[in-house]
Image (tube, rainbow, N blue to C red; front, side, top):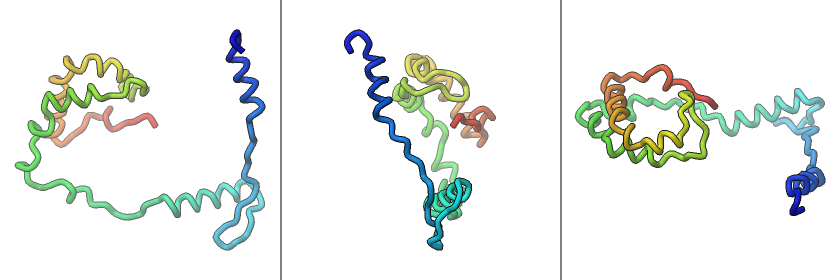
Length: 137
């Protein structure tokens, strides 16, 4: 084991694997599913019923209408941007811009001011760059 821990743990994992499969499930009427497609559809319907939130949320009323309440200069200060950059988790992967969080965190002091201006301008114009609207999930 000391010479090859990788082989040892590989052997242990091979003995621990339990193949679990869902063969049949009951639908809301109590009838058992007869094939994989029907089983997956029943599980999908149950998931949607439990987790899908169909309520309408009016996001426009969540933000005050007065421009005095929300000022870009108050929301995006150099200190706030710096703290957000410094709190980035360096073990996460890069986002759609392919900039690693480790780089952003280490350069937080240099990047805080330019990013502050970008955030303030974006907030004042009520627009986001197209790249910010995409995400890697």
